[in-house]
Amino acid sequence: MSTDSTSRTLLLLAGLALLAAAVWLIRDVLPPFLIAAALALLLDPVLGRMQQAGLPRWAAAGITFLVFVAVLFGAMAVLVPLAVTQLSELIHNLPDYTAHLQGAADDWARRNAALLQRLNLPPSLSDLWRDYQQEISRYAQVFLERVFQSLQASAGLLGWLVIVPIVTLYLLADMNALRARVAYLIPDRHRGTVVALAAQVSRVFGAYLRGLSALCLAYGFIVYLVLEIGVHLNYALVLGLLAVVLYAVPYLGQITLVLFAVLTAWVTGKSPGQMIGLVVSIVVVGQLFDQLVTPRVIGRQVGLHPVIGIFALMVGGQLFGLMGMVIAVPVAASVRVVLIQLFPRLAEPIPVDVATTDMVSEPATK
Image 1 (cartoon, rainbow, N blue to C red):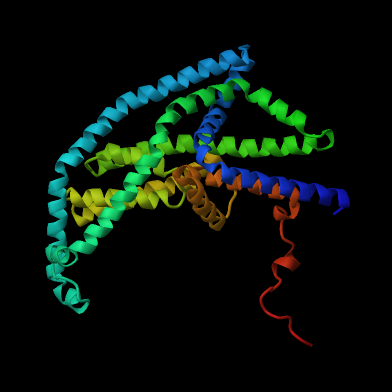
Image 2 (image 1 turned 30 degrees about the vertical axis):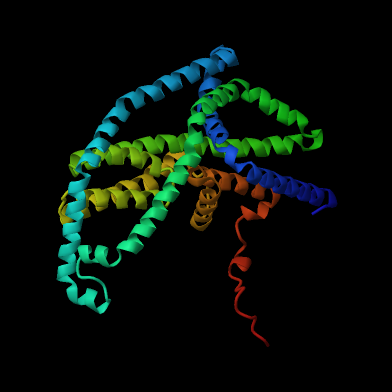
C-alpha cells in the first residue's frame, strides 16, 4: 500500500471515529431525525419517478408526502379502533385470565409436590405469595418505578409527531441539493471515491428499508390470518400488529412473538395441541419468509454473518433501544461496505492454500 493510500485510509478511519463519537454524544436527539431520514429514503424512488414525468422536485415531494400521510392515517383510522377494542376486552377479562393462570399453576404444583418439596418451594401459588410476599412486592415496586420512569422519559415522543413530518418533508424536497452540497465539500481528488461509496451505502439502506417495510406488513397480515382463521385465537389483530413491529427485529422478534402468542393462547383456554399448532404455524410462516420471501425482496444487499448481525442488534439496542435494533443491521451492512472499500480482501475469495492453513495447531517440526 502506498504512502498516499495509507494516509487516506488513516484519515477516513479518523473521520469515522470522530463521527461515531459525535453520534454517541447526541444519541438522545437522533431518533426522530433517523425516522425522518428513513421515511425520506423509502419515498425517494417515488419522487424520482414523478420528476421523470416532468414534475418539479418540490411538487413531487409535496404530493408524495401528502399521499403517504393520508394512507398512513387512513390505515390507523381503521386498525387502531379495532386494536383498542381488543385491548379493552383483554383488560376487562384480565381478572379471569389471572385466575385461570393461578389455577393452572396450583394444579401443576399439586402434581409435582414432591419436586417442590425437594427444592424447598411452597406447594401452591397462594403459598408462594404468602411466603415471598415482601420480596415479590419489592421487585414489583421496582419494576413499576422503572416503567414509570421510562414513560416519563418517553413523554418527549409526543414532540416527534411534529418533528418527524416536518423533517421528512424538508429532506424529501432538498435531498438532491443536500447530496450535491456534501459532494461539493469533498476535495476533487477524493470526490469520485466518496460519492461512489456513499451511493453504495445509500443503496444498501434504501433497499433494506423498503424491502423490510413491505416484509413487515406482509408478515403481520399473514400472522393475523393464521391466528384469526387458522387458530381462532382471541386478540389476533393485536398480535398481528405486534408481528409487524417485531419482524423488523431480526432473530429476536419472532421468538418474542411466539412467546406472546403462546401466553395468549394459554390464558384464553386453548388446549396443548392448539398451542403446539400455534407455535408450528408461526415458526413455519417465519421460516418461509426468512428462507424464500426475504432473500427475494431484500436480496443479498446486507450480507452479514449471523454473529455480526446479532452483535449489531445488541449494540443498536444498547444505544438507541428498539429503534437502534431496527436500524442496526443496515448500519452494520453500511460499515461492511466501507470496510470492503478500504480493505478489498475482505470480499475476495480465500485462496485454497490459506483456507486450509491451521492457525491453531503449531507447525510440525522436522
